[in-house]
Amino acid sequence: MSNERKSDESKQLDLVDYATALENERAEREAKARRRAFVVFATDPEKAGQEDYKLVFACEAATPAEAARKVRPVAGKKRRVSAYLASGRYKDELPRARWVA
Image 1: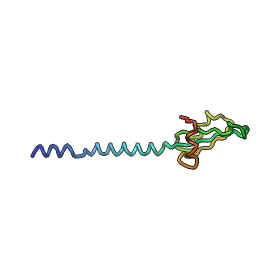
Image 2: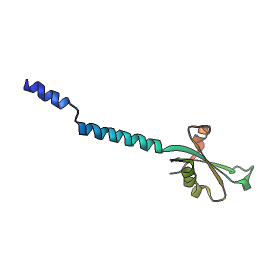
Image 3: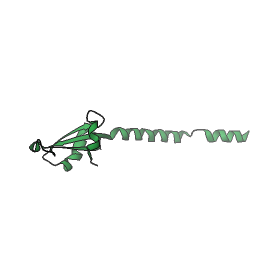
Image 4: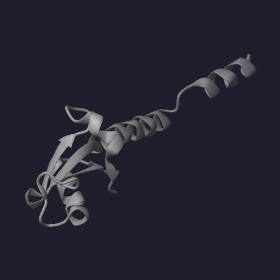
């Protein structure tokens, strides 16, 4: 009977391990929620009608403003920058977007 008791004890969940696993799971969910993909358009009004009038970028950020800040050094100071969630209206632009880390 002592063998049965030992196997039962080894199957029991350790409360500390369980709490640690829950905390890790929660941290992963929060990290994923903070990292969202954005499509960022950078337009140059002086180049209206030209091929490079609109540049399309993609990046991960927590907010549209953060996404715009990431793209600004790559796009240049003259261009207007607008960021949108990649899962929304402009999701079809992702394949041609240039990734910015």
